[in-house]
Length: 325
Ligand code: SF4
Image 1 (tube, rainbow, N blue to C red):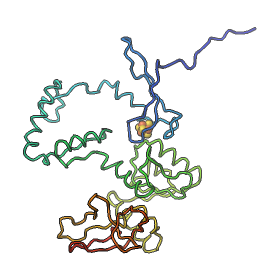
Image 2 (cartoon, protein in one colour):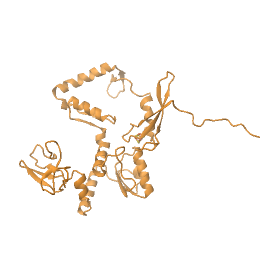
Image 3 (cartoon, helix red, strand yellow):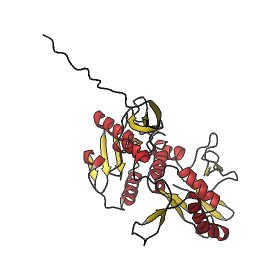
Image 4 (tube, rainbow, N blue to C red):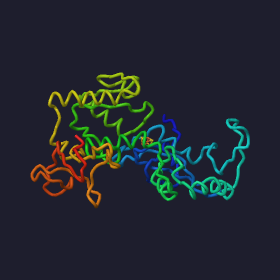
């Protein structure tokens, strides 16, 4: 006797359309498939986000923050109009105003400063993922005093990546997960999801590479590091400098790498009385300058055949310049 089984569709379609894009919930830029479904009025809405298995950065992995990207569109708390505070500061009392009124208010605040001394405006934005546009705005306004969250976070990491492994991170380049023997990870935020880093660290563990975590607390990535250096907050710079000191003393520095791929040989103004004190010496067209070991003369740092001198020194217009190193 056979029993009729109900036919269950275990993978019903969740969307009418899939749009491929990258996640903007952090700077990793994982590839995502955004499932769109029409609402009752026929307008396509984000219904579901999943990782794109064909994307080289995340290979389908999606973190909780990436999945929560749907709330950027659907959260009931999302601001849909400018708000003006109407109660005492901190009271949480606001009223909605029109865009015209909001822009008028902002213009009234900003115009007098721009007309007199635009540099008095200090402009800071959060992790808005559009810092190139906000910096254009600040430049157009006329203030050099602008910054954003990235300057205290991922931009530093990107700069360190460029100087050490030749590229920033994430979508721009990555550590050599297949050949790295020792991986040091400094002060990575415990809540940072970062799929490419998670996947890379997993690969290091698989290969038996050694991981050292430098962080005041031992959770997150530091919890599975082979060694944990629990530095006091604010002393990691000192720790790095002491490492450099020991490496220099032991002669374990790759001087050829420093000379060819970093700004260690670039000449710097070392006259405290000069208005250019502490700045890199540049040619008229803005190129950084080094002393070429072959000719003993100044040259563009990346000129053809130039061999930058790590202990270069020269005097120009009565001012001493010495290599950064
Ligand atoms: S790590 Fe998470 S938040 Fe960052 S881009 Fe990838 S999915 Fe988005």
